[in-house]
Length: 307
Length: 262
Image 1: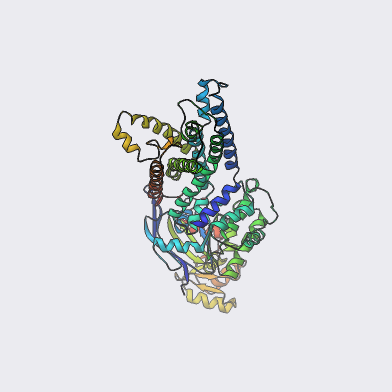
Image 2: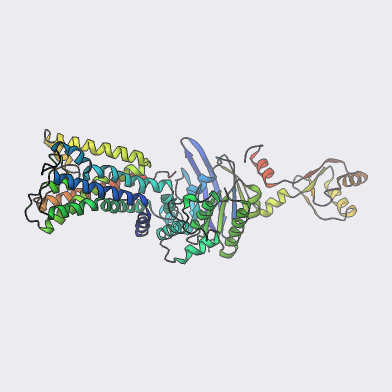
């Protein structure tokens, strides 16, 4: 059984001489929610457009469900659902008519799916209201419903929570998590709302200026962002034994650069400093560390820039 | 592809635009027929033929046919229906062919008032005239001498003209897929239709030019079908039209096959 639903190999896209994506290689595994993070113009939408066949790579390849080649990709795209940039909606139709249009287009015979999806995204009571009279949030919900029509195995959503009210954001988050858990759906989602993404995604892909900067799991991100006291000293081995003997804790981690991350006593920095001094350890750094996803993202892309 | 056609027909059935265009061609067809009836009776001055021509099928379809192409092809780029079809595994060829077929259906639909009114008017045996400006259904109407009509000959002539119009408007398919702007499609096609009418006149002076144009639905005497036109000429008109549509679809495919869909 193929574990990965999407694999890109050195995917590169050049628009008018500008490298919009450069050698992006990533793998998406089944049943996970991938948060795609990057600044405006980082290449997030371009990556999604390449996967969905709206654009063609300058070089590199895409593998969907273990299949390569344009003809195979076209077939495999029937297993995708997507909403890129803004939803595909006919404004003069109602929500149900829009769903019917896309259901017919995809050859789905089950008419009941229209009502089920409208209920799922909270648009069951829109009746004869035309989509042109919908709020931005309602249009986003309908776009998600359309993307879900064919029960996709890979759902690609570009900024799906744009325009949603706080309650709507929570509903969509819960919906995505439910789809992932119950249907083993893989979801690739981009968003500028990093705190929200932090609560939704199980994996993170950070792109910057067309390059893949980092791909990490939620656990790895938590590890990177977890609040701790960072201690740098001349004798890390002795430091570890002092922590265990004097502070009675093993909740620390020795890093490859010989610094130690202490996850306890976060609000007792003075005591930690004094005890280390009394035990003859020369401390060169003792600071509170730990980041939010925003700060971590900024540190990865190397600057204090607009996310 | 069948799903795409079905979906587009569903969309067509829900479209207010097509209903408005249908109403417009219905009114125009009635006005055209009434004027063509009243002019030979002297109830309307003969110099009103210019106005009568404005309501004729060739003029209305040159504008409204391109409007339909703009709405149903360019519109589907705007509302991302085409994006969605491709992202869900439909081939670009299937998208083009389905759009061309539905465009043909829509053009046929808005031509129906002219078809029906021409058929009904001819069956009355009355005299119709629009001077020398008659083309298409109006020419069919005004060229009749009022004698008994063979229903199959009439149907053949009507079907030939429908296919001819659909073929002429198939130029809008590549235009719409490449330009993606309805205004440009309408303006360019209307200009193109005027240009082809002028070019066709050149064939009187340059027979070679005439032979070249006769390989398109704009040339020959294809738009001047009458009840006396022979079966061979109608078959030629239909064959040229179908070949031209195939060429237009191929041109569209070559332009759209690897294009970025923004």
